Image 1 (tube, rainbow, N blue to C red):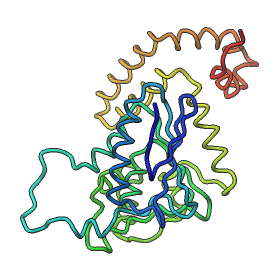
Image 2: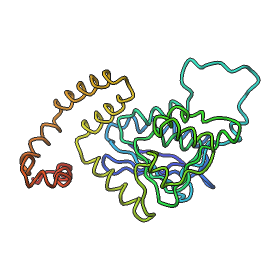
Image 3: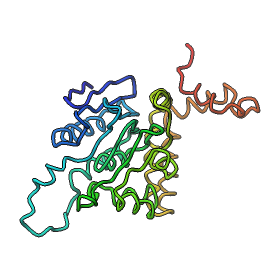
Image 4: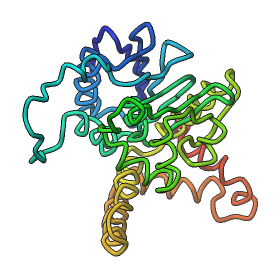
Length: 280
């Protein structure tokens, strides 16, 4: 599927897509960029060939700065607010990334803030750079609040107290703390983040697509009540058993040393081998 955007460069390699954001000078989420992110997210969701999407920035200092404050000031306010009957468009965008049957990874090498941070929090994994990646929810100092899922997503991601500190403090959260608190999966030296994310995304993309997609769906069910999540997990597990990829890879696992003492001692290598094509 061809992708054509001014502010988003999309490169597809097999089951992987890499999206590079470029909206100088600091990757503010302007209305134009928001429109392109929304359109791209719908295209990615519909692309049946993809299982992994990696987002990165063309600017090593800024991943996504925040939403365009001038656009927020232009919003009409000459009426009393009412509770919506359906989600706001930005909420829908975040939910699309959270629920699409693709693994969505944010490679955050510089600053991310406000709505950019909220969008990243909806993605499946976030990786950063030691001493360089910075997260900032700057809404409360502006007199507003994180209105793009932040007050709901960050407590689930960080815990209530830490989310309070990040949101109400409006201060920079360094990469080391963000990793320790669970916002970032891992942090790396600048030269190491790209190769790691590339290896991880390639590894995931090499595994049976049905297993990858249904595993994400099952993990998302962890937001449901405990018993409901367990029933969903059991159902999705049964679905994987009925896929060609599962039958093929489980048989091959036994052939290449699974369930032997020598093989079980190098399980990571066996899993990598299962992602490679069988020799003809």
